[in-house]
Amino acid sequence: MTERFKVQEPAPDLIRGSRAWSRLDRGFNVPSPNSELGTRNPERRSTAVKYLGFVAHVLLSAIVLASLGCAKSAQPQARPPDVAVVKVEQKDVPIWREWIGTLDGLVNAQIKPQVTGYLLRQNYTDGAFVKKGQLLFEIDPRTFQAAVDQAKGQLANAEGQVAQAQANEVKTQQDVTRYTPLAKEQAIAQQDLDNAIQANAAAKAQVEAAKAQVEAAKAQVASARLNLGFTKVVSLIDGIAAIAQAQIGDLVSTSSLLTMVSTVDPIKVYFPVSEREYLEWMKGGSDPTKGIAGEPQLTLQLILADGSVYPHPGHVSFVDRQVDVKTGTLRVQGLFPNLGNLLRPGQYARVRAITSVKRGALLIPQKAVSELQGSYQVAVLGSDNKIQIRSVIVGERVGTDWIIDQGLKPGERVAAEGIQKVRAGMLVNAKLITATAQIDPKTKNLP
Image (cartoon, rainbow, N blue to C red):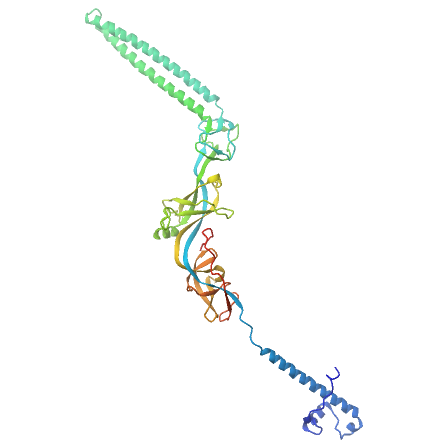
């Protein structure tokens, strides 16, 4: 520390009596050696000399520090930053479309009573699977049993009328047989024979009328028995029975809905297809009822509410005859097998299908594309590893990738993280990574 602040001898150009010394002499009031003050006060002169030495040392230190700073700034530039890049890949890509569908039973049977009466009991469990002909409800049968008994009595009466009419017919026929030879011999008047013949004809007519009454009575019996049978309400189809809409003791009629039974294997799904999509199908030779690439039917895939893929594929069964003028869509029906009754009517699900195959599509990761006010840009690396910002036109999304319709060429390198971390003209150190993810038909790829 003592040597650091050691007083230096003044520079040669600061010799007393020189012009420089005169300026310092005036500026710091240094006494001239010939002056009276300098002669009489040597301590003051020594202080001024020390001060000048200190100032010179400070200036010299500043010059040294400045030279060190310049040396540091002259160091070589930092290496280019590492940037992950992918190559533009070209391949044939299946194009998937997706719609929102509603599941419905193949057959939905409304269970209504065919007679009016009080509901006695429910013979099934709500939500259970029922068979065709299985008893579901019972209505009080007493009134209908009485009607059957009454119809039987009317039938018996009609049958008795037939027997009586037949007996009368036999009697009148005998009269005709007896009167005929007597009338020929003129033993009786011809009028008696004519009356006998007329009575016989009337008796035959009465027999036929009585027989008709018997048939009517039989029909009444059958109707009464049928109504009696209707007091037992059965399922008309195999399926899942809904919650009962009527309670025990309710007075139900033919307009009362008791429950519903739906056939759910197979199960239907309805989904709307836009007019544009339908035209694309037909113009591209992909009839939805026939499929694409020679497939017999368009294969459908069902995505459930929890995001899982239903394991059994379906197919399109029909396309509605007309476009809905309000929505501009066509109603399409698909069929799916429903083993285990996992699917239920009323569920919402996403329906997907491969509607076309794009040949020679260019693919890059979606995160490599940056969107700004409706335009899309990518950072392209030139042969000199410098960044070029280029506008592109995007197409369909395929998994985690994007189809690029215009703006790129196969094999070009693009920044995998987009343009956020780079700028045009920037020199980078390219780190090549895998270009695209494997295309999985279970992965959504929508525009």
